[in-house]
Amino acid sequence: TSKTFDFSTLYTNLAHKDIKDALKFTVKLAFRNSKKKFIAVYEKGFGWVNSFRDGTLAFDEVKLIKCVDFLLDNCYFKVGDVLYRQHIGVPIGINPGPYIANLTLWYFENRFLDSTYKSKYYIVKKLNNTFRLIDDITTLNSDGYLEEYFNFIYPDSLTLNKENEIDNAANVLDLDVSINEGKFSCRVYDKRDKFGFKVVKFQPLMSNQASSVLYGTYCSQLVRYSRICNDVDAFSDRVSKITDDLIGLGFRRDRLSKIYLSVVRRHGLREKFGIGCGNVLLP
Image 1 (cartoon, rainbow, N blue to C red):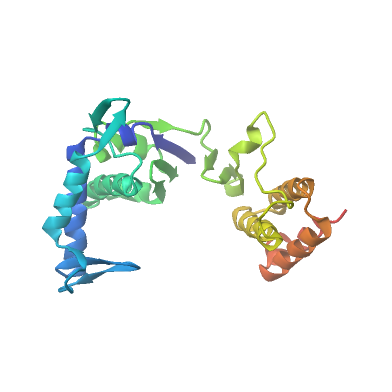
Image 2 (image 1 turned 30 degrees about the vertical axis):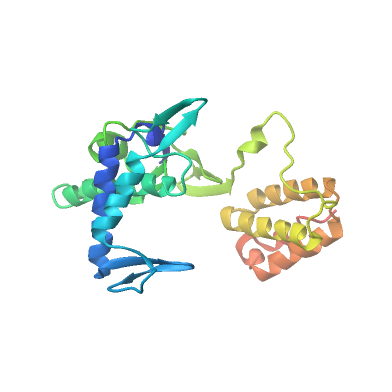
């Protein structure tokens, strides 16, 4: 089975105390594993160091935790003449927002696994094929253990909503995954396909963008489709759609065909999909 879920209240309901506790634990763990006293921030990166030059932006464990707390305690929003201070939830609209949310959830997941794997290893094993990207969770063959233990893993402020209606098919990011006769079938998922109006997804050839860049977009999309799809019919369907869309935007079919055949050859698509995949763009 394949089940997908999302948190409907992740950014709005997480208590600041829970976030602070999670990030404090994460910062302490990072410093302990680094075996260094400071984390130094440079123009093109960062480094764990025991000393640093004057003028270098650097944080020790205590200072970094204080900075995180200050950030959470001092998020203000102005609406008209009224100034509001955010006192609950992940700060929205700031660069570290997604990282704060991700690390906070990781903290609760890690705590649950650490406290469970010795006494109830069978639960941990069932949840082994559970994956999360920020607030989207996908679990495979977990036999309902994620739903059963959700409230033991995450704080009460979070609500988990099931996304897919049937357990043998789900949309995960840009994947349309279904289970047929015990095997996974993967296609490209694009929610815009179901819109009741035509969506222009790519720039027309007669734009200010260099034609090499525009045709390069076609190449990159073909590679993406080939990596997602695991059967030739699903792959051919997406190739036909994007090709028709681009021809409608002024792209030349003969040049698209050359790019397609180059991708087939360079990325081993005949070995993956069979000889017939080379004929997708034939008139």
